[in-house]
Length: 306
Length: 258
Ligand SMILES: Nc1ncnc2c1ncn2[C@@H]1O[C@H](COP(=O)(O)OP(=O)(O)OP(=O)(O)O)[C@@H](O)[C@H]1O
Ligand SMILES: Nc1ncnc2c1ncn2[C@@H]1O[C@H](COP(=O)(O)OP(=O)(O)O)[C@@H](O)[C@H]1O
Ligand code: SF4
Ligand SMILES: [Mg+2]
Ligand SMILES: [Mg+2]
Picture 1: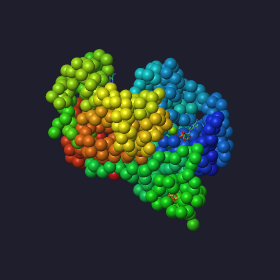
Picture 2: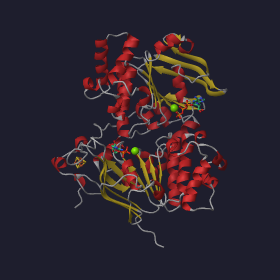
Picture 3: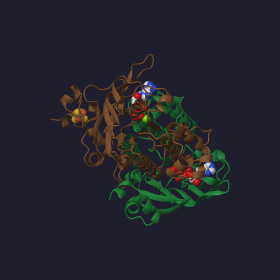
Picture 4: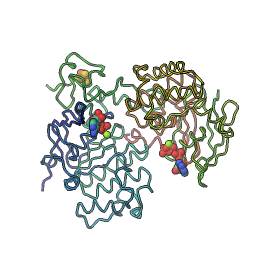
């Protein structure tokens, strides 16, 4: 069997949130992105830019307004929870308190995942061991663990279902710094070792770059830059990516205040015309206000492909 | 000049020693950064200063402010100090903001309670404070509710409330940890500016050594309830003396990339 080169293909995806009496909010406004087997793609961007909306659409939890999502060559359509378990996509959320059942032993919750995949050779304790926890934790309840430990349990449960695509939606942002890089690396190693793809969502570029092969930067519903992690980190091309990197304070002991990006993320119900970043961009030109740069890998008129 | 001095502070809860003799001095117009991994006792140090330790905590040592020991003050006097001379900002602005009250009401209630200001006076000062923390359209923002602001603005409002009664000491526990880096940059600049302009003595608790490097003048590093290293920012971050500080710095992404 040959593996397909693309596991997940998102093409010009639009996802709208509709609520009565209010204009539709375009959480995702024409985003394209792909993930290959064994590949780790980091998705970064400010709060509210549409990362979770995109992730939920990939899992079939948000209806698609326009564009397409294909998993393994098959279109993803909104699904009931039970069928979703069979699709080979698993998600790990920001708050493991909310996603783990407080009343059930963690071993039983991991066993649910093993049943999904029909895995009878692996025990919940084996999975706990793989995420770096003692085997006898299986008999305990979620409240007996720290935030970092709970997140490891949530990862063990997701892995038990043997997903081919693992999605982490801010899986580390509730953890403290030392646990953050450990858990991020753990997710990477476990996904890559099993040949699965990993879409890792975070607002923290400095952690994403530790584990991602490629980085996608999202702004107001669109992917504005995609590239190899090392290249994006060393020489970001989109003005928004540049601003994100300049805002990361460096631990060099020099007392340099990070640079502020003026203004807030605009309202996705009423996005600015032309380039969505134009009201905050230091390099804005006339064309930017008139026409949206609808191309990649860098969606900016300064980087128009020839 | 030392504004607030923490000396030999010990705290135990349920027989477990959480702080084992912490010494720290906060100076006017200086930001003192407190680093250390989760569970090392950073938050407990801040809470002890404010007399906000969990029920049943046993405390010893001294917290000196203007000739008094805060640990020995009667509750009524301590309440006057807390939110007056000593103010605080937490990681999650939701902790400090009431969701059902307008921003203006929360700001003025504080001032009228602590400073005994009249209605109009309090309102004028509230609008001035909102402007100072750079909330756009402060007069109009006065009448709005917390949920109508973004996360970064909510944290700025929490800072405005903390500043309402002209404190001498500000304790900020992970004030930017929940924010995006772009928003964090603005809040850090604000904190630094207020410290310089108002001569505040700031205790900045953060596990982020990048944040520490950006705004702290002095840095102390905690581990297992003790301060293991303390000194000027540049020295501690560039030439750490304690092996634990070195290990914290070495665990940073940039150290690994080499
Ligand atoms: N309410 C409580 N009762 C008993 N022990 C507590 C309580 N709160 C905290 N502790 C313990 O006190 C110690 C220090 O906790 P503290 O919250 O001050 O750490 P911290 O450095 O602020 O950590 P973090 O970065 O996670 O906030 C830890 O061992 C913790 O388990
Ligand atoms: N259920 C919903 N109803 C209406 N708007 C929503 C809903 N969920 C998210 N949004 C809006 O969609 C945009 C993208 O949100 P989200 O994907 O959650 O962002 P992120 O995960 O990057 O923080 C935001 O403006 C958010 O307010
Ligand atoms: S298209 Fe124009 S406004 Fe948009 S990011 Fe590029 S230079 Fe800035
Ligand atoms: Mg989200
Ligand atoms: Mg803390």
